[in-house]
Image (cartoon, rainbow, N blue to C red; front, side, top):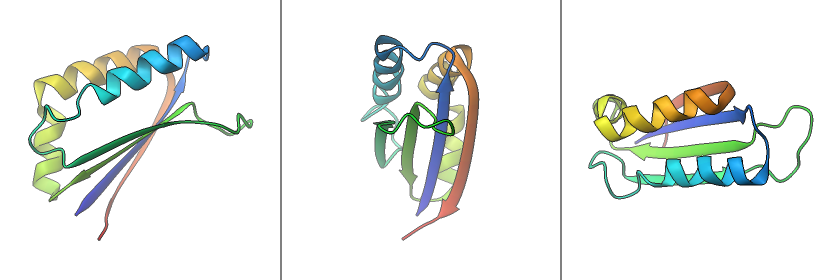
Amino acid sequence: MITHIVLFKLKDESAESIEKAKNTLMDMDGKIPELKNIEVGIDITHSDRSYNLALMTKFDSLESLEAYQINPLHVGVSKYMVSVSASIVAVDFESS
């Protein structure tokens, strides 16, 4: 299993902007065959080092993650998230 985690720091940190970004990410749920699980969390501590949103997704294999990356729905969501984010970081790792 592959876990893909992405953290987003938004340009507009208003509650409305954060909720819209969360809903945009969650819109992929059930629509991309390779995407086995998706979870989106909104930061609750608001510390100086906090990012606004965390996306955690699961895939059966690295090949499934690669297929997800080029899926047209993901590409559109990714373009939106890049346009509204000041910073994005990611990590991918093998998990059980």
